[in-house]
Length: 343
Image 1: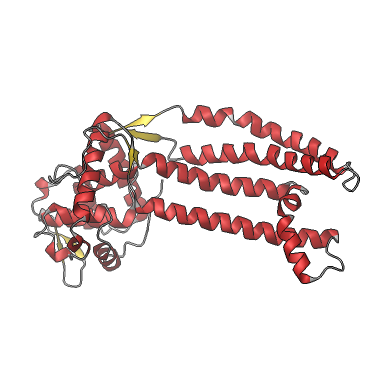
Image 2 (image 1 turned 90 degrees about the vertical axis):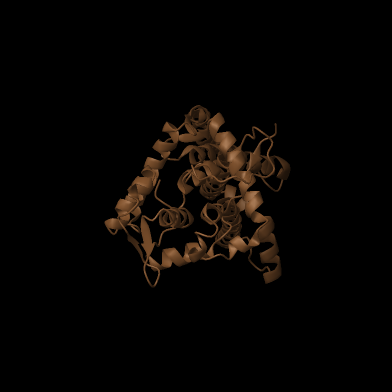
């Protein structure tokens, strides 16, 4: 059965960041081409239109000539693509039953575990808001007038381990403490592994390590080719000179790009996680529930006062990014000001 992928808000954000990174690289390259060309005196006696057009055409050559800028571009793009690759990998799961919709409750799964199975990570705003609303459902916390959350010290026996730990943070006034919540997050990974939903994945370091030697060798090879290119008469032999210029850029940029991409891809607390068969089966149910809830647009407008009415559906609508209003309200009133926990 073909693999499926969650369309998470993170992936949309990452795509936006990739576009911005590429635009920044293009703009920086163009500015460098203009400045470096002027430094070499290439644009003397040219009009503005010619300078702007030729600088755009000459970007690859201007970047390669001093070597360093092409390496910077490779590092930037490698880091961006590594993050995107990690998001795609983390949000992809293997369906087991071929479900389109799933209508049953996921009441045995905490919002944090649901979020973890969506993209193998836990994110600040929505997951904490969902956890607090679920704890409110169980009577462990209450919303004061004005939206502040307080612990009620009742029904705590109904809470799971993640909720009890979060309750302790609420009682200690650390519901918005980034360091404390980062530790809470790491405990959820340990819990998910213990319950059999995720497992550590190995092998990615080997691919990265194989790229280390080509990356290190690319520098002296590029310098040698660069020297040969500088000793080639461009006006008499333009084709060999341009070929060497392209070769210098490729030899230097490609290995560095690939190495950085793989390094960023595996850089998640030195652990790459994957779903177990149980994790894939549960992820498929979560995806089916997400599609089912998407049909009920009223969930996107429901307030936290309706959490009892909608039972756990509203809680999971927050985790699955069907309701943003509650997230913003709870986090603003409780001074939770982070977007993502530290790795």
